[in-house]
Amino acid sequence: MAKRDPIRCLIVDDEPHARQALESALARHPEVEVIGLCENGLQAVKAINEQHPQLLFLDVQMPKLDGFDVLELVQEQIPFVIFVTAYDQYAVQAFEANAIDYLLKPVDPKRLAQAVEKVVARVGMEEPPRLESLLADPVRERELLRRILVRDGSEVHVLPVDAVMYIEAADDYVAIHTAEDTHIKLDRLSRLQKKLDPRQFCRIHRSHLLNINYLARIESESKDSRIAILTDRRELPISRSGYGNLQKLL
Amino acid sequence: MHPLFRTPNRVIALLVGWSLLSAGLSALVSGITDIPLARSLTLFAPMYFLWLLFLIPNYYLCRALPLDKGAWTTVIGTQTAILLATALIWALLGRGFALILDSFSESVPYLDYFSGALFTNLVIFAGQYEFSALLHYLLIALQRGRDLEQRALQQELLTSKAELRALRATIHPHFLFNALNVLANITDSESAQARNFCVRLADFLRYSVAYGDRPTATLGAELEHVQNYLSIERERFGERLCTDIEASEELLDTPVPSLMLFPLVENAIKHGIDSCIEGGCLKLRAGADDGRLHIEISNPLDELGHKRQGTGIGLISLRQRLKNRYGDEATLQTCREDDLFVARICLPLREASAALH
Image (cartoon, rainbow over all chains, first blue to last red; front, side, top):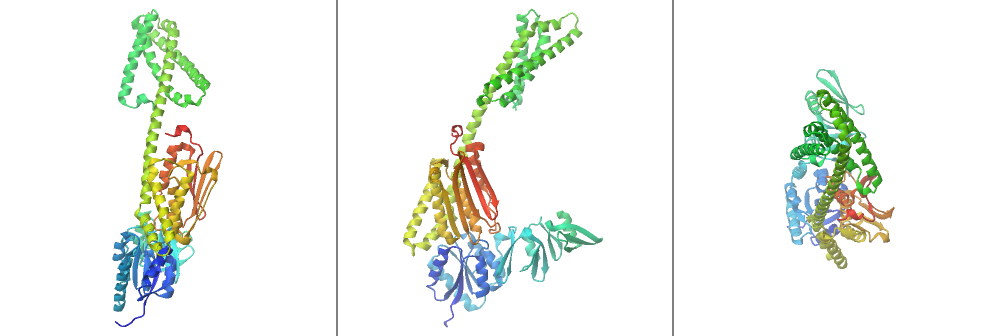
């Protein structure tokens, strides 16, 4: 095999000892090069955005952004992920998420060597796994969101769903409107809607999902054309089926 | 509710028994005075039956005027006043009833009979009134005894539940995994620190396991226990966790429910400091004033830091334990103060002996 540049990797873990231990264990594997240590998900998003690593050793349980959150935010920028977790309740999830491997803490040096071997083999094939499926986190699919994560370059915003006034579909993106700002996120409106509380968010239009707490009143222009007036006087169109959805909810 | 009304059978027994008693009393009065038995039954039996209506409510009066508060004069005065009032009402009703009977049969002097036997009847009524009051006080005392017993049992149950929960928290896989993990990471590089870590972990586990044998610990032992826990977590959190614990020296021997602090401190770490990306400082203060022990635990909290919110079961069960042990004398309050979550416990420095079982 021709000599290759080492695989550039990031270690993301909130526990200092765990970072150091993994770093020193990886020192025995010249085929990977640790280019950075991140203490939390926010740092990880920033580092991934700026340093473009090929491989991530990703802890699952971290404050603010956990491992799955980090992946959600940087899906298109990271080719290979190895989850590192103390509890194997995440192992199944990690595999379903198509991670290249997962390691249990404390990390067994032999298992680490196997995982590194797998990555080396895959890097040669130049065919990164489909990251779309990395996000199919089965546990989270069933849970309602309390917050929406959006990324603006290296910066991550954590929006409480209660602060979201409405969400607008725009091609492959959604625009999330709060009273102060608008955030763009790579996602589909229907997918996002499934994860939001149906008693709070109503699809009033093909391209508008409204938080009904911000609905001030409904005005009708004609029999089939109605407009939602929001608490800050913004106006949104209501489609006929959207009006039906609203009536069911109110 | 009056204990005699609790089941239908009791009500029936009461009505039958009281009817017989009324008839018997009528016969007795007929013997004492020279009223013929049939007349006595007609006139007095319904009136004696009526006493029931005066005596039953006495139960509530007895409950409102407990004997143990030491206000004997108030109790006797009030009871006597009520007795006189009800006797007067009864006498007036009886007179009315005799008048009605008189109007039906001119030949029988019911009113004279009533007036003649009034004194005897009032003496019997007073006797019955006092008897029922005594009976009610006795009932109330028995009931209170039963309540206390029930509370003691409940306390025992809660204590064992708390013990179970504490045990589960300590041997909780996550906690043990985390501890093992830390140990694996530091054994190579820092062997002295690793040994120290093991000692802390052992102390921590020992205290939790031994809890079943002692429902009461000293504040000092409790503080040591949470400090062991915090030193284990500090290895894991690194610089994200700082602690600031202050308790006055003279309070360390104060008896407190064991494992009272652990759920609060565990909460502060798991749901508070771990939710903050920068971590933060757990502050614990123990002080006393006015015969009461005050403990305050505060920690930063990022409400959106975790995907899931805590269930609050730890807090609920601690509150229940305090209530069972101290009644209204102890409180556990939690609140948000800016970015901080604050829990405050306040309990009497000396427990009332009645509250201890």
